[in-house]
Length: 302
Ligand SMILES: [Zn+2]
Image (cartoon, rainbow, N blue to C red):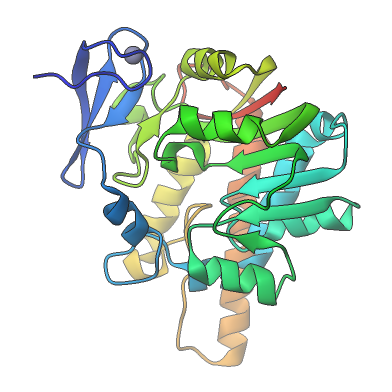
């Protein structure tokens, strides 16, 4: 029997993509793409901790601080104008990783807090970045709630976003970034990120979900990520599996070379990552449409 769509409850979903032994279905009604069967709470928990089989390598990501900080700066440029309209300068970031973006916001005079699933990130964000980060949000309201590439990971996006809406002060802004994998042919997406990406959205499914929750002034901006993806594949093939240039969300390579070699490697890696981010946020403004694999920046207001 075909699984029911989690977005519109239609029972008419077709097999869409298979990856790492997991299957995605696409709803013929609304176009939502979802993993089926989904993961249990215990399976999800395991994914976000640094242990055998874990998908995320937090130590490497924390070490790649220049890249992550640069990415945070570019993201803040994209959403700066909407953040400037927040009724108060307080922000909650869901899935804040090591806290680079929150740290930049704090430098701009914001009161900031974050949540994380990973205990490694929580420790780093608290002890090194001196940020208020925990498993769950602090019990107060904010002028802005931010989720960068987190939506696909949430166990129940509609319920979770509704709970986050209640965390916003009147007029508060929601900012989220997610991929548009549900809009394009699977071969253009390539890697769906199974199994941690439980869902894939499109502009229409985002609009309808946010509208049902009660958000207004919903605006979607898109950046084509196909050039970045293509270059990551090329660089990976050039440098071999142990030194592949990581995609923006993954870790940095480590080596056993001497200090000067390590410095050169680190400079090269930094330049390569800057170039990849330019492909995403600079060149990515071109041909950013529903026919291309894009990252979507969505802003909305309570
Ligand atoms: Zn549907």
